[in-house]
Length: 362
Image (cartoon, rainbow, N blue to C red):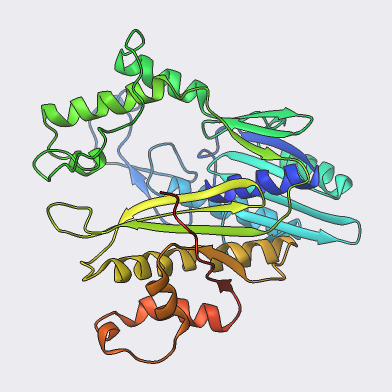
């Protein structure tokens, strides 16, 4: 989804056209590269037999079907002189003397954009000739995202998806709540922390937490992300943490988000993989985690044609963590921090990121 939002942000900023296509029966009729047999369907043979059917083409339900379809699609795009991005295997691009063209695929849904209109038209026709395609026109709905174009930019929301979720839970008549979980409450393992961790052994308390989350959606279904036209293609990152936020393991929670110009394209909140001895160490680990995302997105943007000419600002509010990251001297108090966390120092030395101090409002 980060790649989808990045492409939409760039398209909106540069006022490109954005199209969508869909494949009919994507997992059918692709040639199999291995021998796969199946039991004859009931009624095919008049009497029970030990014979099996050898498949020549893929069918729905085969574990090999998604891979076979994607391999077939990739080989077709490569024949059209498109290149598969090394930063994201679902992104294909081609540059010509007249401009460029991009295709982003998710299973059987395609987003097509670029500056070379003749290349885009040719690609759409070639796809129709190679597969059973449906041209959906200008992008309006993709993977649960509703895309609304206005003169000043693009609005993204998930109104339909959320309404379907609320209906599924039977909470249409319930009032909304302001937060997905109760404020200042630390749930323990035997209670609730993040509900997805309890899929294997759910309890009534977990259901209560899920219902509160959905009630939060009731009041937020019309909220949107706005991607303005003409927004600069520059990355800005922000990092924070909740020290020892897990009451069971005492591990800290990393949180970060990233803007492309004025468009919010990436965010994440995740428990750290080990205990931090101080708030400084927790912030340092959080900074190192987002640094990987910064490097990846800078590579994506450079490949698309928008290289970042300046280091990406990574805003943090912990001066001690900034000093550790910018000071290559080995400190006695940081010797226990793993080498992978010091990856951020290399990024600073190479000019990939800078570390401006973000002052916290009190």
